[in-house]
Image 1 (cartoon, rainbow, N blue to C red):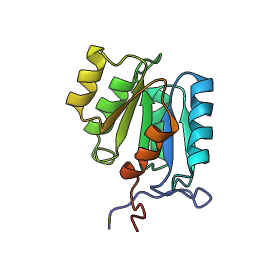
Image 2: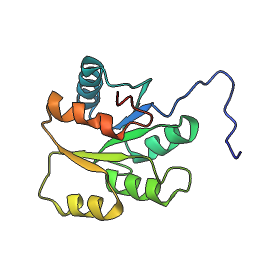
Image 3: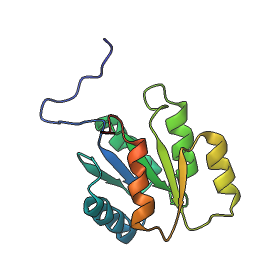
Amino acid sequence: MGSRMLTPRVRTTPKDLLIVDDSIPVRKILMNALAYIKLPIANILEAADGAEALKLMEAHPVGLVLTDINMPNMNGIDLLRAVRASPQWHDIPVVMISAEGGESAVQDAIELGANSFILKPFNIAVLRRLVVFLPGRDTG
């Protein structure tokens, strides 16, 4: 069985979720909303851009990535491209979040394999549907 060795003190689960957004308030709103709706998420990780997200993903396996499109350093499209190109991450669901629903970036995200797209401002009902992307979700 091929697995990556993690440091013993780091306990991770594929039910960990990664929020990638350069806006701290947006990350906090998402975290609070996800806690409120009680999705079966073990841990919520945060990154301010795609480059930081990739570093976190190296250290902490995640089961779902929620990413903004427009960010400095590495945007959400480039993050999606890197995730889909990686043998270890290519099957992780990636949900794009953006205020720009009509942009070509949305089409790019779909073509690159984004699993879904959420427009800002989002609501609790939309976030509840994220459960379909969580690995090992309890459907009973």
